[in-house]
Length: 190
Image (cartoon, rainbow, N blue to C red; front, top):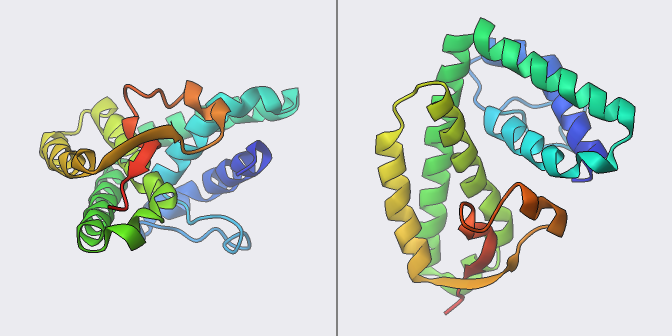
């Protein structure tokens, strides 16, 4: 997404966040933007905010000010709705980890076909990492999930082909190779 679109997603997401947290949904459709934007989730917000961190120089001053206000709003929501926020984070983390597991299982069965979709699927792995980071920041015990993810990463590394960064170069600043290695290459098609 372009920085302006990322900011719109964050703006609309933050406008809906209290309703989202009060709901049973893990993925909240952002109407009337649902055809343009992904559903709202904590992982989606965290990814957009991280991407905007790298791209904020491209935003006009007023938009950068708005971004700071949106980040402050998210911080307040984390505190005011702590239990709901944590619960939603845990549910999304479980959902994303299941989706990543299924992707890697499909890759093991059909490497040529499944490897081609890796750049889109890498967003799942990224959201897992950002959700884990957020969970640790909130004091959640995520060790079991980290262990499960390490095992999945070993599967990916066995079939890994180092390559260029998957997305636009400016994002490398917030997704360095040493920490986000899965964004620098792709699984072999065998």
